[in-house]
Image 1 (cartoon, helix red, strand yellow):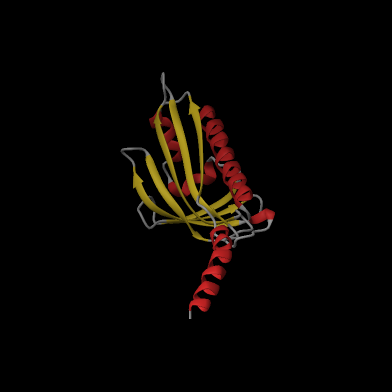
Image 2: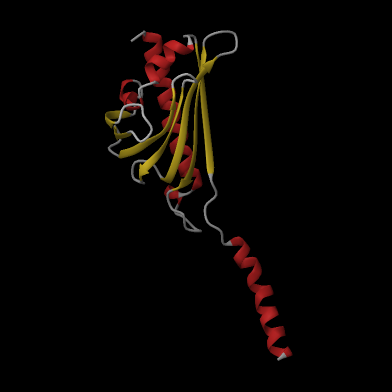
Length: 179
């Protein structure tokens, strides 16, 4: 009996480090910001429509939305790259100029993530103007322990950074044009 206990203890000791290194994906985070000369109210007027992202994000070809700006609303974005993303609105606060949403339907060809939640907010900027903050938390597309390069954490972070950055630059151009 003691011999079996020692064998079991030895086996667990050897396998312990393997189990510790075998873990799934870790949550990732991207936060992109942009400072604009326009007032928060003017910027919010452009971004406040959850389904209106097509009007300012250069990477979005079309957007179909249902439910307006109420929690539970949904938008389907067709990207210029050809992918389709479906988002669901979780919270909307016009007074605080902020809304939060999440990926409703995974499409790793469009974005190499298996899930994300994001918040877009407009705040007064230091010294006037406004600051727009786009924050996303997400998991990589391949949640196995050894994902391929195109579906790993780095690919997910790069894709989300690019999507947010392009959107904020598009917003800057839209607001500057006064449209």
